Every structure is written in structure tokens, then in C-alpha cells.
Length: 211
Image (cartoon, rainbow, N blue to C red):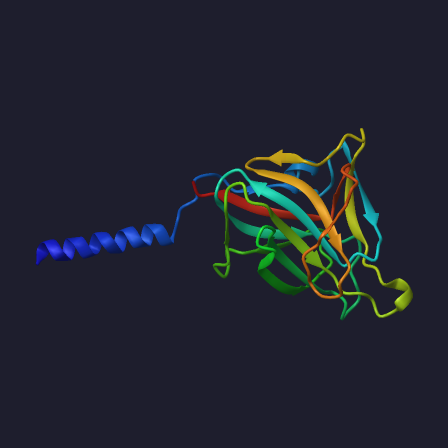
């Protein structure tokens, strides 16, 4: 009987370990440490310039690939201006590109902060991402009420030396490109932004490896 109890306890411990996989690496952020100063001022490094970008684009996407299996624990974005209510209803979502599927989505009211960060650890929403697969972190903003101003300005970051910004690797994450689309509902951006000198959106994510 004692052996049976020990065996069951071992099974429970093993299941618990598998269910709550501990991080094997530090928290990593992608765009922010790459292009922004580390002094907490939310200003770009001297080698970059941050400019606004107005278009009829309603969906931005930043494609990335992890070098290791891991978890996304934060999604973030920044707009050049705060849309007036009710057009500040924003969708922030994550796409599995190979499956052509939105695997996580959340609706929020953009508060007009410098960089909005959605912490996925609060409600246990961390998302597992597989090694060498392509994913896309995306943001959708609704059109304004006026037909002649159907655009929401976004941000783009340029290198002052005009060298290509993408692809680039920060930690275990490689950013491969930026995409856009125009539907009025959150959709998977499928039109490549050919300008590889800029970061668009502006989008970011937090990640740590679990292998």
C-alpha cells in the first residue's frame, strides 16, 4: 500500500512539472531593447528616428520566429495618436502563420499611453510558441467615422544610416518582416511592407524559453 501511495505521489509531481514548465531563460523583449534607450525614457536610441505613419491600414503585423520553444508573456504596441471614442477600441492578437489562425486575441481601450503593454501572466494567458515556427503579433484599429479620414496613424522606426532594420535578431527571437491589411475587422495581415528599413506598428512582445 505504501508503495502505491508513493507511486501516485510521483505521478502527481511529474504531471505538475509538465503542466507548469519553468522558464529556462530570462525574460526577453524584442523591439524595445533593439531600438529604445534603456534609461526608462521611452525614447529611441541615437541611431534611430521615430516617425508617425498615416495610411488606411487597419491591421499591422510583425512576423517573428523563436529559436527555442518558449512562452509569450506580453504583447505591446504604440500608436502615434489616440483615436477618439469609440474608435479607440483596439484588438491585440497573435497569429500562427503556418496554420493561418489567430491563436490569441484581446480587445482593449487604447489609453493613449506611450507604449501599451498587455501582460499575459495576470490571467494565466501565456502562449506557447514552437521553435522555428513563424508567428505574427498584430494590432487592429477601427476606422474613424469620417470617410475622408479613414486612417489611424501608426509609428515606424528608421535607422539613421538607412541600413536594413529587418530581419534582425534580439535574444532568441528573429523579426523577419512587417505586414498590413485593410479589413475593418481584426484579420491576419497578408500584404508585405516592402520597406525593410523600418519597424512598423509599432509592435513588441515579451518571451522566455522553456527548453
